[in-house]
Image (cartoon, rainbow, N blue to C red; front, side, top):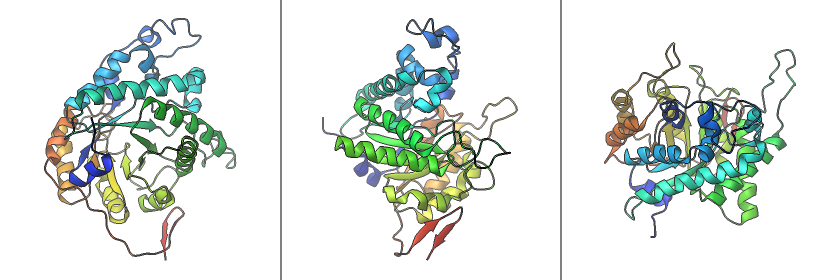
Length: 346
């Protein structure tokens, strides 16, 4: 079955990204034994909370979650690989499983997409590269500003391994997401391009950063516009924002990005801010009020949900943008566009 490319699909409508995987996994109330399964029954340390491992120990559950999002209207499924790099997996001493996890996660998402895809409405798998649990440009020690707990080369090596496995599993897109440190994102982008060159095969790349608080900056200090200029040379399929904030607080930064972004714009905000119990209270209807206005303002090409969102959120968001025209990227004058913490346009 010949499916429409995602580039073609983006021209005709606003595409729907799925919602939170972790939020859905929590609903299953898994215990340590559920994470271990039989393969890791004798693992030498606790592994409860290693959600990426569930593609190996609870594959039916992960596939079921994917299918719930597809049934709700998702066009793009994210693989359950947010922490599936050797750097992040070191917390569980499971670096050797990175390849298996990424391949299997992509395969499960691909199976779900094939079940729901039609020539008129193809579904796509976005192989996720998360930010890791380390930052390349900020010291972990306030008493030693020059200290780093990861190097650029170590990040590149970890991201290359994960990207290679995502592609072998059959990913349609590579999604570099929840970026809080631009140097981490540059390492990921460099690694992805290295793998593309080695395989003589390339995929569309989505990049999504995180505005950490009301300062309007990433954790490493960049404004949204500066963050975009730092990575526009990758020529991504889309550039966007996700996590940390709900749609009410994220709107001004999506607008800022939409004004300067020459490719598609994506957004997958949280279901508001977490309450005192770490839970998210904003329901789909409340989120849809904001997302509908974003679409009417011409800000969106891809929209979905991050922390706290469920298939019900995605169903309502999909309905709220159905039939609305996708954003048209601006034609910007040719200028020198550089970035530090702030943008510099000459």
